[in-house]
Image (cartoon, rainbow, N blue to C red; front, side, top):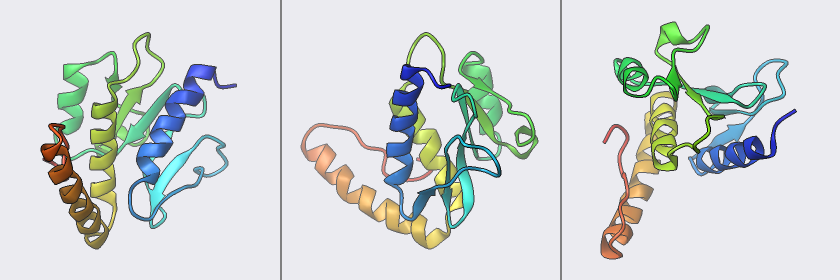
Length: 144
């Protein structure tokens, strides 16, 4: 059973994922833990015990993340050989939510059709203008 903190972490991941165009929550196979897809292709999978998630990463990024913070990032079983990255969610300190949004968004961009990525990026460009005007920051493009 998931700890109360795990429910909060999963809720934040869910919110990030479901803001993306045509993203849907659908468990993987016979599992009950959330998985997020675009056009029925997974881009985020949360472990059954909700202590980690896996995301698709661009070539070379898996090694960079794992080497930069081996306590938080790891090479997951089964999909690690395909470049996916594991992210531990159950550490003493909460995840850096800007970084989590970045890895989730990048995974989405690698999975979604180009038209949906352009649609999402166009919407983010408008937010970037709003954020700059208000003094905030926004990452507007995949891979930026």
